[in-house]
Image (cartoon, rainbow, N blue to C red; front, side, top):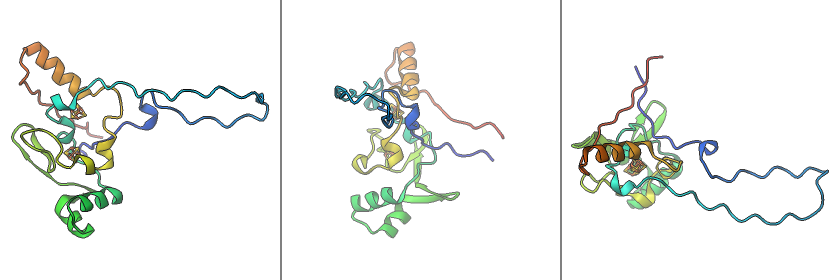
Length: 168
Ligand code: SF4
Ligand code: SF4
């Protein structure tokens, strides 16, 4: 049986333009004060979620919910932890993940995606993995949808994208 696609933000080392931890000063380093570096500007994102049917909320069947995420979800809905866990999550192996629902456009999607607007209905309280996605300046799904809409000269086109894992 193949694993369900998981929503996963890029690892920090995969992210571009991210400041790295400064190395410890060598004892032989000159005592001269170094000029303070200006903070690195946030790299410009080359995707626009407002012009995407929310592939990332649909393709990934596994969106992990940490204990902190569950507390956020519960507070957002003014529910207790157990009630929020039962209503909004399910088990996937050993993981607690968001429940899903049918979706006319992409087959199935996260229960919190608005089917019409294609926007997250709990944006301020979305799980950690959603906050970090895609973790890069580009989003491959956005690139695909842009490419296809340009080729078709039709802004309503939605390419159907799936992820399959080869058998191990
Ligand atoms: S698939 Fe990419 S562009 Fe589309 S909503 Fe997700 S992050 Fe945004
Ligand atoms: S919680 Fe929001 S951002 Fe995360 S998968 Fe669901 S709809 Fe998308």
